[in-house]
Structure formats: structure tokens, C-alpha cells
Length: 127
Image 1 (cartoon, rainbow, N blue to C red):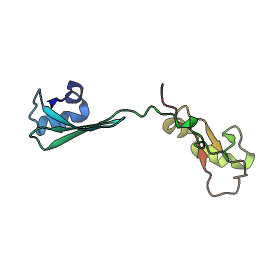
Image 2 (cartoon, helix red, strand yellow; image 1 turned 180 degrees about the vertical axis):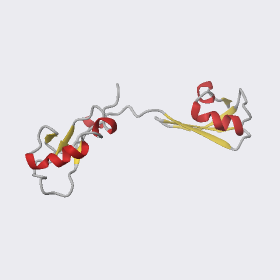
Image 3 (spheres, rainbow, N blue to C red; image 1 turned 90 degrees about the vertical axis):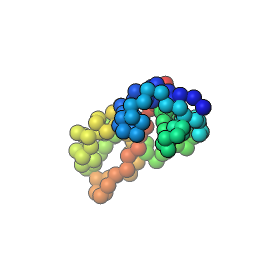
Image 4 (cartoon, rainbow, N blue to C red; image 1 turned 90 degrees about the horizontal axis):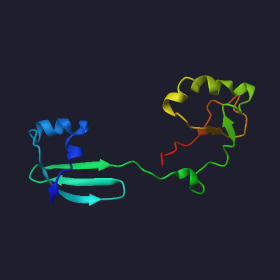
């Protein structure tokens, strides 16, 4: 048994629980339930509350064999054909917002008359 870490007590996501359920206590006893590589789980003693916290996943699946789709060999948007401009028009304003710094790839077959296109890319973890 130990005291709950002060970083958790001061975290904005924990503020409402601290205020209502814990009556702004400054020290809270907890017992470790289980820790895994990216998840931390504590039970607050006598409070009927559990606290779970996740740390960022540091693995980069890009290096994992078979994780990259080998059928997506053309870079997007540079490798598009004239009739595939519809794909770029749909994504041009949104792509930098939802997938910043991601290089997308598309399969080599012509999507000019297709109702949809599947693209793939990687969000690289910071090392």
C-alpha cells in the first residue's frame, strides 16, 4: 500500500473525481492491483474507486514484418492518375489535420471509376 502519486492527483482528468468523491483530499491511500507495460491500475483504499492510467505505446509497427501492406506501392498524392484526382480533392483539407506527417500509399490499380479508395500509412511514435 502507498499514497496515490501526486501527478495523478493534480491531473486535470482526475480533478472532478478528486473534488466530488474524494472531497479534495491531499493524500489518498491506494493499493496496486496490476501493472503491465503500458497500464497502471490502483485501487483507492476505502473509497470504492479504481484508478487506471496508460502510458504511450513506444513500439513502431512500421518495422514489424508484414505490417506494411505490400499492395499499396504508390505514394499519395504524387502517384495519382488524372482520373483519381477525386481522392485528393476529398482529403486535401482534412489530411494535415487528422494525419499530420504521415505518408500515405495506395494500391497500383486505377481508382478513377471506383466508388472508394483504400490508403495506408504510419503514425510514427516519437523515440
